[in-house]
Amino acid sequence: MHYEGNIIRPPSEADSIILQVTVGCSHNRCTFCGAYKDETFRIKDAATVEEDLAFAALYCKRQKRVFLADGDVLILPQHRLVALLQKIRRQLPWVNRVSLYGNAKSIRSKSVEQLRELKDLGLNRVYMGLESGSDPVLRAVKKGADSDQMVAAGRRVREAGLFLSVTVLLGIGGAADSQAHAAATGRVLSAMGPSQIGVLSLMLLPNTELYADQQAGRFRLPSPTDQLREFRTMVANIDLDRAQLQSNHASNYLTINARLPRDKEDVLRMIDAALAGQVALTPEHFRRL
Image 1 (tube, rainbow, N blue to C red):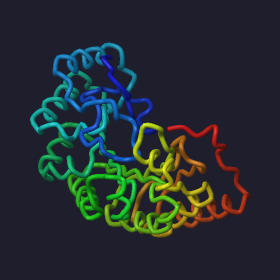
Image 2 (cartoon, rainbow, N blue to C red):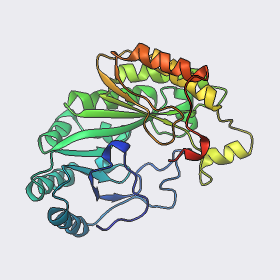
Image 3 (cartoon, helix red, strand yellow):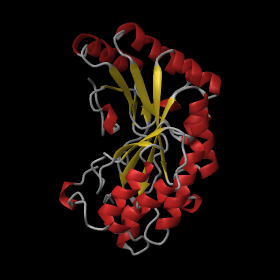
């Protein structure tokens, strides 16, 4: 496989064929993300992708899923996405799920009909980074969309019949806006209606603007206890008919895998137990991005 730069994939794609279609992120302005700071976004040439597909056809027959990397493959023109999915179906007929990242801008650039066309060709899952439902926080971290635009994008994915996995980030509001960020995030998640919610905890990276803000005293990271309180407030504000809730990313202090709304009260009790010191938190030296 011809991999370039940092290959980032969701935890649930650990066993997938990682097919890199783009290099970097089409937005690449978020103040908290250092994954692609040294990369200029570009679409990889078709010949290289073809070679990687041929490699997968020979050596990846036990893997039933494909994840299209990097940061935002959905930004590709529709005709290129259609052609790519057709090739995957033709060359990897055993694959039963294709997934990719999509930000609010790229999702809203596609009509519901276009998204349905991609679904009919094998696209199953879109991973979207919400991070926060708070408009002041979204502006501060330069996410590139407000909460209404996030909701519209998420609903468009769901209307197309695709599985929507939304990522949120504990701590991103800073100590000052910790609870406001958490409550707004729970409300926006409820409006989006995701199939899956992935919870991560902020880890500041030296190559990011947010790290520089912390060093200059402009940003204060909430303590682990305050991030757990955020988690509780967020969950308390979620009202969904059916969704997975997972905090299984290595950045988290507390791992939870639950179904909402069935397990909501159990989740709140577990967080309360952690806050009371009755459940051990992940030690700092074990946390990773």
